[in-house]
Structure formats: C-alpha cells, structure tokens
Image (tube, rainbow, N blue to C red; front, side, top):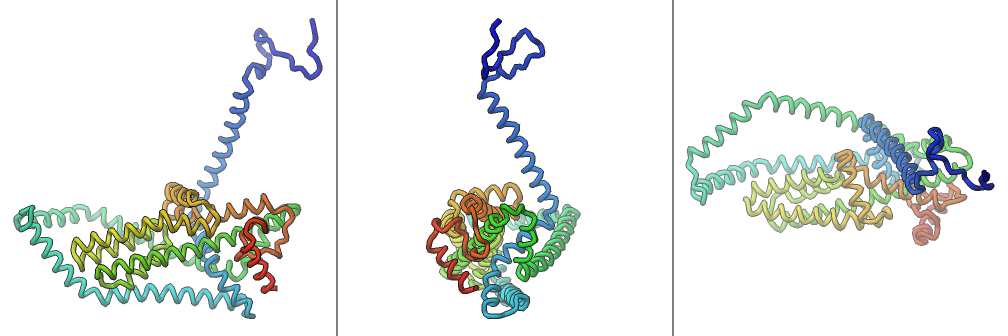
Length: 401
C-alpha cells in the first residue's frame, strides 16, 4: 500500500467513523463558514456596545453634546489664549458669552411672542368665526347643532381621557427634569473639555501602547478638527434655513417674522424634530393670521426649505466640510434616527466624521508628530490630501508657537 507523498494530505475514508471529514467539505463552504461565525461575533460585540450606550444614555448623550459644544467654542477659546488670556479665564468668557447669546435669543423670541399674543388672539377669534361661517354656508352646509355636537364630543373626549392626559403630563414633567439634569451635566463637562481638553486627551492616550501612541494621538486630533468643521457647516445650514423661511414669511405677510426666523435658526441644530417644531409654529401662526391659504403657502415654503436642507445643503456642505460623500451623510442621519431616535440623528454624522478622519489618519500617518497637528483645523490624513488646508494648518501652528 503506497504511502502519501510529502506535502500530500491523506484523504479520509468514509468507512472510518472517527475520520476527519474536513477534506470532504468544499473550500468555498469552509471559507464561508469561517467568515460567518466571525461576522456573528462582530455583530454580537457591536450589539453589546450599542446596548451599553443605550443603558448609559443619560450620561453618554450629555457628554456627546458637550463634545459638540466644545468643538463649537474651542476656536474662540484658542483665539483668546493666543492673545495672552489664561485658559481658565478664556473658557469662562466664552461660556458666559455663549450662554448670554443663547439666553438673549430665547428671551427675544419669548418677548416678541408675548407682545404679539393679544393681536394673535384677536386674529384667532376672527379665523374661527370664518371657519364656522364656511362650515355653515360653504359646500358642507353643516347646521349649528352639528358644530355644537362636535364641540361637545371633543370636550367629552378630553374629560373621559383625563387620566391618560394627566399621566402624559406627569411623564412630560419627568422628561423636563431629565432634560434639566442633562443640561447641567453638559455644561459641567463642557467647562472641563474647554479648560483642560488637552490634558484629558493626553491622559487617555497614555493607555495606548507606546509604539502606536503618536499615531493614535494624531488620529484623535484630526478627528476633533473634523468635528469643528462639522459644527461650522451645521451653523451655515441653520443660517440658510432661517433666512429662507424668514424671507418667505415676510413675503406672505406673517407677523413675528424675526422671532420665527430666530426660532428656525435655533431649531436647525436639532435634526428632524427641530425643523418640524419650528416649521409647525410658523404654519400655525400663518393659519391664525392669514387663514388657510396663507398657512398652505407657508407650509409649502417650510417644506421646500427643509427639502433643500436635507437633500442639498446638508449633503454638500457637511460632505465638503467633513470629507464625507453626500450619500454617506444622508444614510448616517437615517440610520442614526432609526437606531437611537433624535439623539442618534444628532450624533450620527459627527461620529461618522470623527471616525472617517481618525481612520484615514491611522492608515496614512506612519510616523507622525502630534506637535505639528492643529486640532482645530488640520483634518487631512497627510499633506498630499489637501495642500491648501495643510498649509493653513502649518501657518496656524507657527502662529501658536
């Protein structure tokens, strides 16, 4: 009986019950099986990470928002530090100024709405009378008794569901408490990020092995620079939304144009729900002041601007700012919304931008020097990716030195 030659695998015998049957399995099936179980392990690990983030959402979301706010305010703090302000004082000045601007905008909106409320109440009464007259004398030819019955049914519905409404109100009150707690935590974390962000990042990088520490350090700096670019692009989109809807409201003749445009600007920083709420307020005021036709026109304007934002401005401006394909931006927002709701939509694109810049840096930067990377401007993986940006980054670094 001939022995198998060197390098040849002995074929198992089907009659041997303990023989290794691997040789009878096609190579393609073995590779597919190996890929499959590895894929399952990766998906299970990702699911565990997502579950943990969801479990700790009350902490993760405020910290993430604080990181976004730090990316928004860090350039101002850096500028004050360059003109010889202590970093702690610069952080305090920027935070107080930011809170003053935000509070001033909200106060302006609330004050304008309050001052215009009596006129809106009169217009609401007039509009309700017009609607009632149209229901009676219009094509529907409803009787006064039918309208009164409908009103009585609505009141009865509210009375019968009073317990459910009360529960919803209590839930809303609890949600407001959680929001206030999250706001305090966000403000607290933002202060430390702005005042000692470099120290915090240096401490975290110490946990990385020495041979790859510089590469990880540079990748993190480039990721934060991409986050700064994302915040700037989002602000530009918010300005376009506010100006577009404000001009449309002014053309239609809707009152409170400036506070409504300001409200749209603030709401544009919150994906999906911000646009829906601010646009809904504009449509309701148009319905009260200009009737159904005016409300329909305003609704068309709001929908048009939102379509321009979601399909043109966000993909192009955000894609250019954070070096992402427009399709990637749209898909990231959609996946974030499905996976984690509004918080997911808010954080999906920034997370994708940071990962894109960081991974690109890890793949291209072989022996980087963290001291040469500007964490507020330089997001290129290497000097050949964007010569103009790197030149600007080098100039900024020299200025800082």
